[in-house]
Image (cartoon, one colour):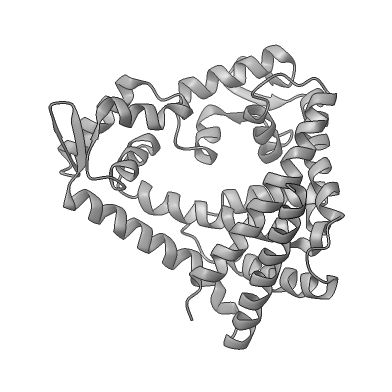
Amino acid sequence: MNLKPIWSALEESSEILFDNYAYPAADKVAQELSLPPGYYAWVTVIWLFDATPFSIAQFMRYFPYGLAQVNDERLTSAVQQGYLAHDGQGKYRATELGITAALRLIQAGNNDMATLTPIPKESLRALGNLLARISDAAFNLPEPPAHVLIKAKRDLYQRTGTFAALEGFPAHCLLLEGHRDDCYYATWSAHGVEGHTWEVLDSLSNSDSIPFADLHANLSRRGVTEEVHAADVRELVGRGWAEESSGVVKATEAGKQARVEVEAETERLFFAPWSCLNKSELEELASLARQLRDGLQAMKGEIHE
């Protein structure tokens, strides 16, 4: 059975929920709390680490595609604002102010989603139960991949009561997203490249060729500098994964193949725990996923009318 359409429908439902309900509710609370711009940079950190001290190296394991220096600067800004504290020895931790704000934001999203009835409650409960079995199977799989994001998210949702919202659908869907991120990290990092280097190859693989200036502009949102991206291109050229001529860069067939292999292995690892469901259960999951997506799309249409 092709599992990709099922996951696609689940992802679409998750996006509708968060883009139209959870994030707007959180943003409203952020305004009430007068949080400064860019607050998600430290809020997501507190969601994942809670009150546990963490280093930039540990932070980069959760968010591996940027630059340590840039992230350090962003966290230092949160220290100055009082949401994080620094111990002077390379470790950050959340303050009471930061924890309270981060908790308010996620609870606002949970509360808003909990009021929705996109499909009958019994159907939603059945969907949540099936996803819970898959996410539990993923969490209990032998490593690799290491259970990094899926564990951090599971701990977060247990602390914040997120499993209660919409019969657990948002929580278990996000747990599976965390599992997929863990699988993806395990496969591309096995090549011994940095996250920002792999992101360059990923971008190149989606186009025939691109001027370096455009490539950098497309990927600059994470704060990676032009110099670092230039070094990334040189590394990819050295590996035989890219070619550069007169300021124009393109992926080679070898580079595209490396990406294809990583994607294929990621899919294999990601869908492995889905085997905990039999054929009839997978068919039920597919039907429920479509029903939820269609129900949420109809509700989204009502919002924007």
